[in-house]
Image (cartoon, rainbow over all chains, first blue to last red; front, side, top):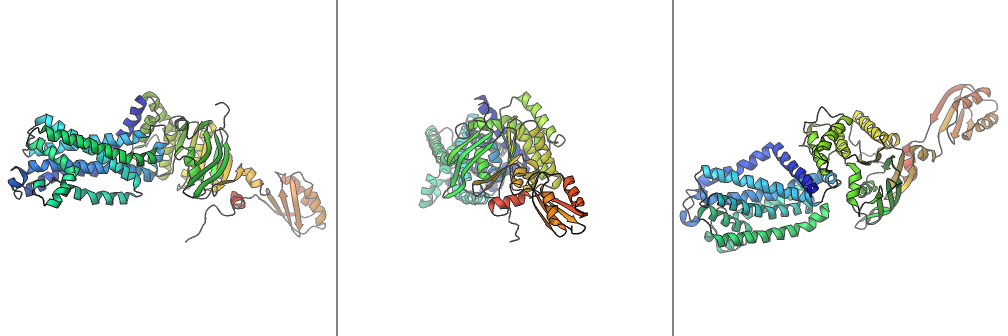
Length: 256
Length: 319
């Protein structure tokens, strides 16, 4: 077991080292969510009617959307580094060493999980600076982290599966770029579902983004709605199991 | 397993769809050898390499590395081999030291052992002064040396190098060769994959020429060249000798000389093995020919390659 942690720890450490070296990616990764709140939040706060969103604080409303969007981006990027490793042959070098095949995959999950948790804290901190205080307090922040991480795991699994399924990195980026925007806009990130046209509402309700956003949002705005929270956590666990199962065959073929 | 071969490949087949990349390969490599797999791109040598390094599974046949089956005992194989892939296979963002730290952990070295082995490996490949720079800034030769250092940390019994000098300049090339010779001297089995004939010729104890998934020829570079008929000595005379038949017989009588032809002012001798030039010169002078020039040529590995595969190793076309 200690061998497993030695190798997994070293691989995870590598991902963080890479991230710290990619200054631009790091800076934009942190600032982009802050910009969403600052620019988008401020320009929309006078447009959005309090009836439509159920609160008169649009920035508070939107914080949940930005949290989930950020997890979505980080999760979908979860497979990217392995695509590059595969293209450079570095992956073969890793696989020729006596490590458990799963340690490479697990290291990606650990990395994305820690990264998204840090990003969520930065976003909530930014929101706090704009006077958005989650009504559920610190326990609520912990619950937001849990929900965010659960979503991140499933998305990372999908991304890893795609990374090995799609033959080129440009194909991967096109596909991810193509699905990211609709997932955000057809969700409750920017407007509440109740005010969507029916056909859009149907899609939005089926979108896992919506469940997650609504759970995070009520932790920020409304307080502990336990039934909703438990359902969302359970749904996300099912989502994760589904994504991991879906990807594991591809992954086992690629690294097994 | 005592006394086992370093590599034992038996009736190896690897198919991708209906295409056989390796088509019934048998090969044995002895411990301590510097062994070369030689063949054009697509000959099956990369596939063979990937099977040896546990990255691909054979379709059929068995492959053993120091007695360990590459499928059933993959982890044991990984523990005794080092693998140095092609030049690009480094993480541009990590420093040389960070590469070594990563691989020290992947081979589960305890921290104290790791730091002394890292120092040692860096010294061996002459990188001790650049260890804290990201390898993205390194030249091709330096990247290769980082990779070799990474492959040595766990003190493997065998090192696999995939095209060790592909894309390197002349100086880096001879540096890499020196490192490899050093490793062989320490008793390591070194297996390289190459499509450079001069590299195989200068570096390897034995070569396997592989083409279209099969073994075409096997032996030391010397043996392979000799199998084409050995060296040729061409003697150019000052003037034609009076009795060419006598000279021919005299030359043929020299130990190690095979076929001889004497034609006006040129005598051509095919050697069956090394023969003394002195004796040859002596006979020519005794016959009154007078010596203008002596050419000593041997078949090149290029000719060996063409002989066994029917084509050149690389098509040098501009298309």
